Length: 93
Image 1 (cartoon, rainbow, N blue to C red):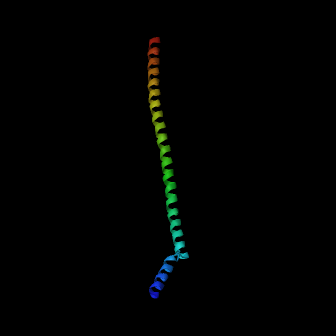
Image 2 (cartoon, one colour; image 1 turned 90 degrees about the horizontal axis):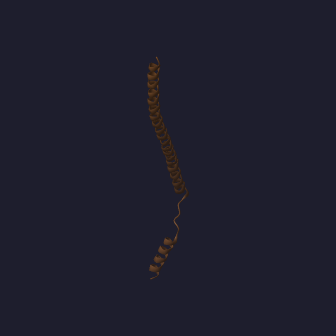
Image 3 (cartoon, rainbow, N blue to C red; image 1 turned 180 degrees about the horizontal axis):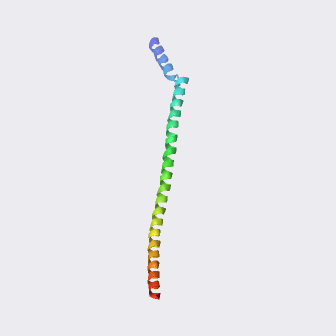
């Protein structure tokens, strides 16, 4: 029985031992983490810049459309005023 007890005791001791990462594995994990961060952070930054730039472009397009419509209205008013002036000038002769 002592062989069996001895074997069980060795087995229990092996299970109790901590299996930590060695320095090389830890450095490899840190390097992978750094690599992932180096790839994702610029992508996030560029995506945000594209979003805000496209939002500014959309705002400027809306302002352009408003100004074009306002320009059409003003041209129409100008044409009406010119027409009235022509009629008044013709009546005065």
